[in-house]
Length: 133
Image (cartoon, rainbow, N blue to C red; front, side, top):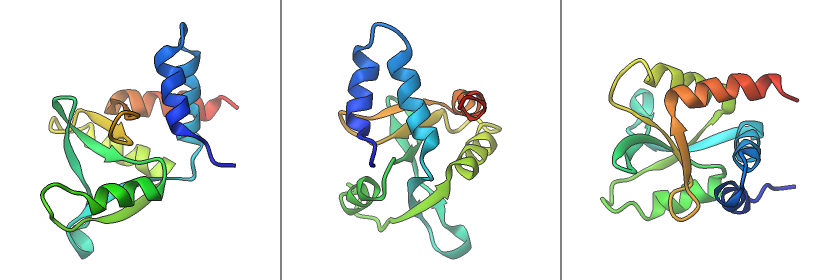
């Protein structure tokens, strides 16, 4: 059964407690893969980072269709492919990006139902949620 992330984002925004936000992130960490826009070719293929909320973020998507829709409508008309990583690998990638100062965080599912966290928070929450059943 597919998770409706738009509903989870709405619930997280309107919740009177942190339960909605925790449910959203548990669902994101429970996915098999995260999807990204890949730029470059061959060994130079990398997930795309862009400005979101005034800072550079790694753009991620909870499903391939959302990522493909974004790849098809890139405003700069540059080609982008959809790439995916297992969640553990994606979190490891976030941890590696956090060693620099260029990327502030990860931003999922652009648009009205976008959500994100800093790189350090992604890593910390993943470790916490990985221990929580």
